[in-house]
Image (cartoon, rainbow, N blue to C red; front, side, top):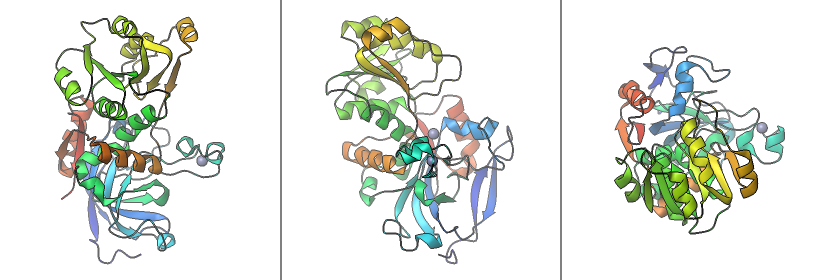
Amino acid sequence: MSTDSLPKTYKAVSSPRPHGAWEVLTKELRDPLPHEVLVRVHASGVCSSDHFVHDGSWPGLQYPRIPGHEVIGRVAALGSALAGSTRLRVGALVGVGWNGGYCAACAACRTGDFAACERGDVTGFTFDGGHAEYMYAPERAVASLPEEVLTNASYAELAPLFCAGVTVFDAIRTSEWSPGDICLVQGIGGLGHLAIQYAAKLGLKVIAVSSGSSKAELALSLGAHAYLDASSTDVVAHILALGGARLILCTAPYAAHISAIIPAVARGGTVTLVSAATDGKIEVENVMMNLRRATVRGWGCGCAPDTERCVTFSTMANVKSLVQEYSLEEFARAYAGVMENKARFRNVIVFP
Ligand SMILES: [Zn+2]
Ligand SMILES: [Zn+2]
């Protein structure tokens, strides 16, 4: 499908080299390759994982690279192989998340575990992402969204669901628990503020934990049943007195804080690391975990069909990301806010 009716160029933000300053540049718009979807981007969330592109610490990154893996927009053109697609058409509302597609042939893919594909692409890492007016996405990375998702949320409020949202939603959804069980949410940031909403809407008794009292009111307004200030409360003793936490979602990337909260897990409970702590090793007490038959597991972002489920549920349950909007030209400031932990709670690049 040709792009004759579209602009000849588009603006994007790009990293020229590891540790290079972000550049806003103008690129030529080309026709999509056979299996590509050209997306007119309406909003693109800034994720702390964008730092891998900035500092070059992701294996195999090639430069220049446009990051952005929390993307919502509309189909602008389809590659020739997708002309007969029954789900994608020009103008359709779509999203692109962290998972940039899968090979369909590796050991993980052959068992249907596409998110763990050994040769999978990562949006904004192995191909250019959504911090741009247009992006080219492999068809397998594209989620199809019904128009109704825009009835109670803006493009900007939806964008973070494609990484932050689906990650915490699936971390909860795929754990074993019953309605009314205690879910401890460690950290109230980009991931945590969504985790509180999902866990509460799904029927868990949410107890949010952070340091200080400044986030208490917010946590309760998001649906938490209680808030604990870890700087003045013995969180583990408090939770164990209630029978322990069936779920612990660790969302703030501080290894020491995570290690300290793990002993609050209930018998048969699950601790899920959705954080990406790189400031040290997480420690667990082996015998305690044995006696409680408890689990510590990691969790990463799902695939396009997972994001479709997450966004649909978010609309139904009125779960929304709290966002601050920036223009593409303001990207460096939006990124700095995320890296300095000042975002309340997701910074999103929006396009008029
Ligand atoms: Zn992300
Ligand atoms: Zn694969």
